[in-house]
Image 1 (tube, rainbow, N blue to C red):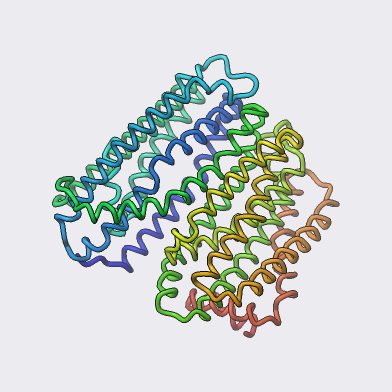
Image 2 (cartoon, one colour):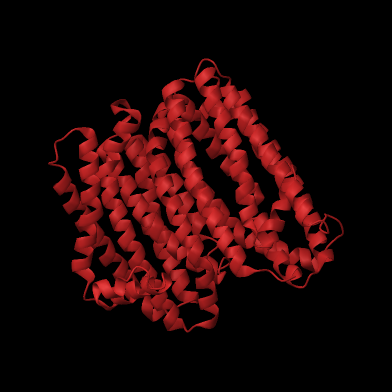
Length: 517
């Protein structure tokens, strides 16, 4: 079967960007409505249950990614029999996964009260709410979830995006109405459950209509099953590590500091999530090109690409770090009020976390593009376990600061050095590794210097909150660009990087002419 890659890629990116923006804006609206009409403690409950279910969903073990990968060749060969066999195996795996998630989820119920510190809303039963949230997760596996792989393998993820946007519009609209009119949190969760069912049913109906020849039947050979299971094992530790790293903080905060603090912290972290969501679009758009380059281009050329992307990412992250440092507190104050402001220390830690999180993600993009999951299989797990250990230790001494600081320490001291070593041991030549480390240190130092300078420039602005955040944003947006231009204008990496942007945009931005490169 011939796949129109260019057309599909444009559609996937277009609707993917729309879904990404939609999934940033609408949850922000929902959080705001809950805070003002019900109270932040309900957000704390929602964040806690989400984190628990993310850990339970580790049972998925990367089955979806492995199955989609296994479909690529039979789709090219138009081998519908093989695809039907894969669908049958996928369906069976997801039935087992849903059952295991259900059993593990129910077995955690007696311990729920021990991971919630302090008060619980009087009008809810945490066990009933937990079961409702657990049902959402289980049904996501049992209701035709395997059919999603057909769209992914055929590079038609725009269809998934359309279905999700339609279903989420229904969900968000009714959630807002029910929160405002009846202020019932059970209704909020029930609507979420119904939306998950709608997404799965619409996906199944659309898949049957578009791919009527594909249905789950037949058995793969034992050798084919072993190959698929090997890919799943290689993805296992990476998936476990990633989920623990993202979920452990919320569970520790709930258990030691309470739902109220968790909700306030999640307001701050939502800003980081929104920013990383925007960066997702960038990383998604470059990973295929990087993968192709790693196959056909020289080692030196690929290393130069890494340096180029690192430079450009540092430029963007420096601007974002300045904006976070200077606009975080005014934004939170405008959004939810002064009662939900945390100390400025948290702003610093989250800004540092964001910078290194994005740098780490770029390195992971190269890892995924090269497919070196087996070589790097222990790093995510070890990093996340160290983060969890530091969480449990530092939360007793530094409270919330200790939880955020733990993630920063684990990422900077363990995660990044380890993945750099993995990349330069497999993809690039080791002789470049020291130089790359030095470059990262230089970029980090420059980012800190510029961010501190912008902070001192903004701290003396003593106007009303709206004028202050406006001026802070303008300073944080323009000053870093000017300083970065001064620092790097004469360097070769600056010229290479911006000529690359010029070529990607087909010269529409006219960067080379403006900068006279």
